[in-house]
Length: 103
Image 1 (spheres, rainbow, N blue to C red):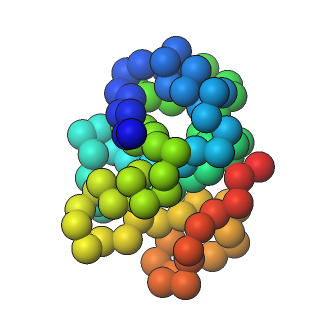
Image 2 (tube, rainbow, N blue to C red):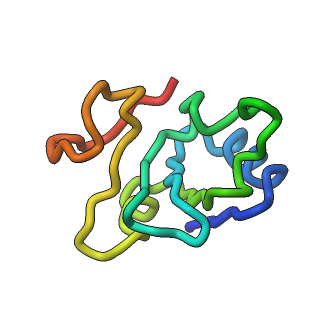
């Protein structure tokens, strides 16, 4: 099942806390394939307290699922979602990225 969060940090953070094996696709609001980064729910770059008092879901949409495939295929059919560079050390356009490691 896919959950989509926009302007709803409280429910988003509750989902992340209760779905530690899940995936979060971070994209613009409204969603856009031009920026779509897939993270594990445990990734420190998409949970906890955001920098400078900002909110996680104000400028971005979080597409969340227990299934990596469900979360990653939502931006646009046929276009691979990028993976977190901070966790892979590779560029977002690297076609060898298969999954990311959460922190």
